[in-house]
Structures are given as structure tokens and as C-alpha cells.
Length: 546
Image (cartoon, rainbow, N blue to C red):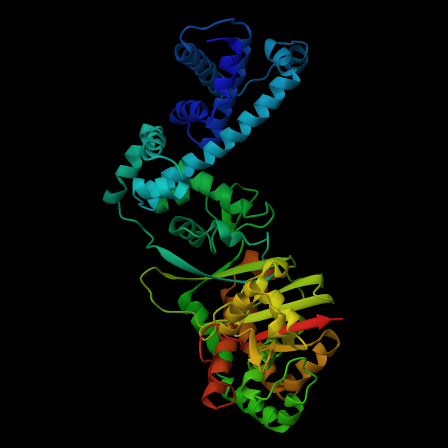
């Protein structure tokens, strides 16, 4: 094999997969395997540059690999000892070796960057295969389908793991696990796009690890022993959970003493249910005030300057009742910050995560409502368009944060229908889109025109819309009582290292079912109309700026 052919072969994915497997089998973690693999690649490139032709390429490769591994072991052994040599840095700096000369080549550096990128990807795949097989108990064919690789490749990566790991994992069934699997119900507030740490904590293994750290710091070794899982998996999973999705906000944080602890609030299901009762005890009074204000403001609610015709207060109130529950929560939080946690600065970030944990076999459901909003600028003749939708037990989400209005034909047609849109002006393709938009509750047909079937009004009227159901003025005493009781509960349950998350606890844990409970009370009292289907126009608001 000629020099150029060898260089090309070294950069191929299949070759790197085998080489990484060689390294992974001999190292204690994928991070260490990456280092060894990189050293072998550097030495291979240097050796190839000196050869015009090699008859047996793989024999040549493994000879170099074993020599580098021997040096790697010797280096690792030396680093484990404490050595003190005067002027060692000066002596080393004066030496220029063949690797330095090799890296002077721009082409070699370009090739190395591509190879390192591939190695990093392989590292992730090896870790995923091991965790999926041993911890998530997935079958080889399912792993193959999920990762888009052959079953033989899955097997090769599994058998490339260290023998000690395979032995430890095979013995797991004979050990008494101290923790039963848990399942997380995630909640969040703020902008989740690019900031949501729970996206890398979807597997049972990840959630069990975070759960063990919810209120007590532990080392990787302690977690390994408690979960009966090899250190390799624990260390790598901790790195993933500390990194999160953006490298700044993860589900776990590393302390200065080398221990790890949860970086978000994780409340047991029973704890969350108990805290939610604090709001629940005052629910009859809240429903009474809502009913009183609606009765008084019914005409005002119907005559509001909507840009979409509205005749049903039961429909309009889906959005108003949801916003009124936010008003009560905001008032409670103001009291908590000012009166009960005045000496603590609340956490501030683009997005904040929390979780309620329950045993995997627990079929209980958290009946809460969420509300996601998206916006676009200079679209369909408007300076800005903001669209929000509720979702929960009685409503299915139309979209979530990060959804692009400009690429959604249904939403674009909804915006165009403001003020009326002639059906005969639509193309055949647009008519099909219109039928879908009608089916999901976005628009309705009125004669020969299409019009919005959701709430639409101008941005300048947004504050006035909120004031249509202003409940806090009549619930000050209720808010005071809730804040007083809730502050004691939070202080007794919130871990010390997360004390600046007291507002998160109140908004995501204690009040999780507040909106849902108020909505159900209002449906019973015939204040809210019961949606005809899960995917409908209830709870959808379009706010435009001309």
C-alpha cells in the first residue's frame, strides 16, 4: 500500500472504529481512550511519512498501536508517582521532536481535525451502546436501529469494553440495588430553546443518578456503589449531566471538593402533592372570586376589541382563567421575595428546570397546564406576531417553544385570515391547508370567507385584556395566607444549596396543578366551556403589532 493510500485509509470511519475499539478496550473511560487513540494516530502519521510502501497495512498499524500503548502505560504509571525535577520544564522546552515537525504541515493538521472529530463521535457512540445494552436493557437489534449502525458494529463496540466492566455488569443481578427506578416529570419556566438540561436526562439511568444527588453531595465512587454500576458509566454520565445542553446549566453541578450534587430542584411525588395542597385549600375562594368577576364583566369581556369575532365567554375565558392563575402566583411570589426570603437573591437565568420524581411503577399523573409562546417579525404584513397556546389534561399542544411561525403553513394561513380571507382566493394546495387549519381549531369558515377561530387582538390592548379578569385585588388575604404557609414548607424542604431557587419551587412544584384545578372548578361551575376535542382553538391567542 502506497503512502497516500495509507493516509486515506487512516481517515476512514471503519478504520477509526476499529482503532478506537483497540484503545477503549485498554482504558478506563472513553476520555482516556480518546487520548490513547489520538497518540496512536499521531504516531501512525509520522511512521507513514517515512514509508514508501507497506505490504501488510494492518500488521503495520497494530505494531505501531501496541508500541504506543506500551509508552502510554509507562507514561500513565509515571504520572501516578510524585516526581520533583528542577529545571525539567527548561530541558523539555529545548527539545524538538519529529511529532512537532509533522504537525507543521497544514495538510496534516487539516486531516487530524477531521479524524479527531470522528473519534469524538465514536466515543459518544461507544458510551451509548454500553449504556443502552447493560443499563437500559435494549436488544442489539434495537440499538442498531436507533443508532443507524449494523448489529455487528454494536457487538464489536460492546466487546471492546474492558473485561472488568463486563464482569461488574454481569454481577449486577446478584446485588441488591438500593434504589428502585424513578421517573421524572419535568417542568420549566423561561426560554427552553438551547437552555433545557433535561434533554440529556431522559433515560432511567440518568434520572436515577440525578435523584440520588437531589439533596446530598456524593462522589462518583459512592454513586457507583449505591447504584451497583461501574465507575466508567457513572463518571461519563456525570460529565453529561454537568454539561447539560449548553455547557452552562446542567442537572448536576460539581463541587470544589470533587463531589456532585443536583443543580435543579427534584421533589418527591409525595412532597410535591403536599405542597400543592397549600394552594388547593384556597381554591374554593379563588373560584368564587373568578365567578363573581366574570358575572360582573361579561359584557366587557365580549365587547373587547378582538380582531376575531367572539360570542362565547366560555371560549374566551380559557385564556383569561389561565392568565388569572399566573396573577395569583405572581402575587404570592412577590410576597415570598419581599417578606420571607428578603435576604436571598433569587436565581436568574434564561430557563429554569425542576422535576417531580415518582417510582417508575407509580401511575399517578401530574395534571398541570403549560403555555408556550412563539413570535415572528415582519410577517404577513405585520411588524410582529406573537402566538401562544395552552396544553394540559384537556388541551393538546399545537406547538412548543422554538417552533417557527414562518415555516408553518397552518399558522401563516391563520395570520392571513385576520380580517377575513376569501376562500376563492386560495390555491388548491392552500385549500388543503385551510381544511387542516379548520380541523385543528385555528380558523373557521363564515360564508365565503375564512376567519380566525382563536382570540386575536393588537399588542397595544394586551394589558387591557389581562385586566378583564383581575383577581388579585380581591385575593390579597388569600395570597398572604398562601405565602406564609408556603414559605415554611419551602424552608423545610428546599435543599440548602438550592435556597436561591425558592421562586422556582413556588412556581414549578407547589403550584404545578393550580391552573388545572382552577380550570376544573370553572368547568364544573359552567364558567368554562368544555373543549370538543383535545386539539382545538381554546387557549390559543394571537397578538399582532401593525
